Length: 116
Image 1 (cartoon, rainbow, N blue to C red):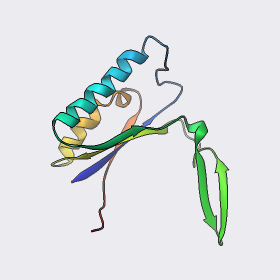
Image 2 (image 1 turned 60 degrees about the vertical axis):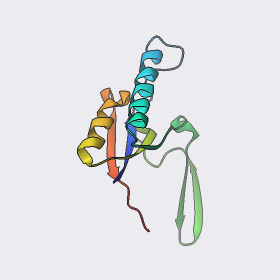
Image 3 (image 1 turned 90 degrees about the horizontal axis):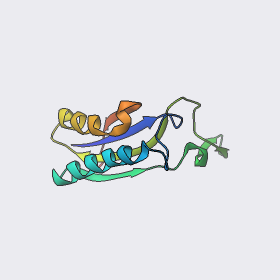
């Protein structure tokens, strides 16, 4: 079963490039990614640019509306994701707990619905 791990954290709290905390933070991501790759469960994963780069699109009554910024004002924003092909939810939880942002944010796990 494929699971998407959605990584939410506050951009205020996340270690920034050039800070002392950034190296170990990114090392944690590399360790998780390598562990998932070596176990053969990594399908895909990427970080997202800052929330300030977001554009939101909605269509109402046939008219397209474009708004700068994310859909909702929240303290935590979607910062990246992984797609893993795990045996079960317990295995997906194991990898989610390895994501460094889970220590100050949250990782939402969602089964991927495939339409064959």
